[in-house]
Length: 279
Image 1 (cartoon, rainbow, N blue to C red):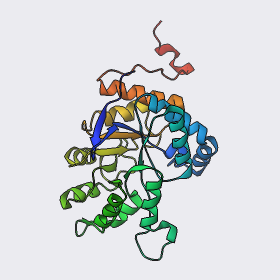
Image 2: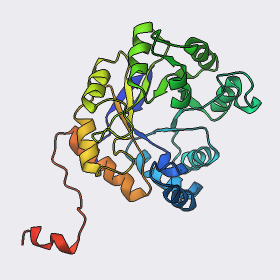
Image 3: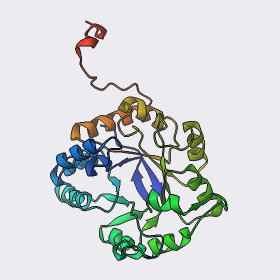
Image 4: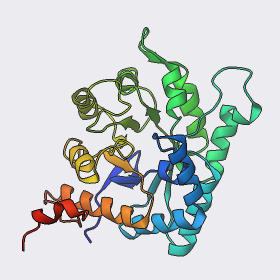
């Protein structure tokens, strides 16, 4: 297997593929039944099995919230492999007075530090609530990025709003990278894909794209083919999988697309496709 390409973000070497965690933690973006299936299926060992496949391919970075299952699986895979995993954590926290004390920003950032985060990127629920389109600012972002740096983590922003990237760049926000929705289906995106394509191209910092398969709505070959061929060499793709086989599939497809090769992965076999096969 080819070595997976890497980039540099905030002085840290990162693989250009990052392991997503929604399909570990039960965030299907499909239905409550699908969420329940994921949480009933995944446990510490099963998640560690999937992470092992990624690590064997040189993909040693994981993105997700500071949640126990993810933390436990990361500990297990590090013990198995003897390799350290780079943690890109996306905490949510109170941005108004009166919230529960356990969700105060200081507590959230301390917890991320305790879990070994290298990157701490306030979740979309924080970033997009702070975005002030009228005045063209992200309110109080410097306060939060300063707190992150004080804890020896690298700050970034997670957003679903394309304006966040533009405004952070324009105002010189102290961040090293962005998490941005990007997929061929336009799933959850607030403007057309070609607009987001342009925003990613013009971003002053590397971009970690998310939901390339539109939460399962796109075939892996379609979703990954689009994203890998329309981002820059410094940008990344975050993709979640449910099984080790799915992990191998997205890795193989991605290496083919990055090498400008036509993918040669095993296709689904159904009776209706029998006449499509050559003798």
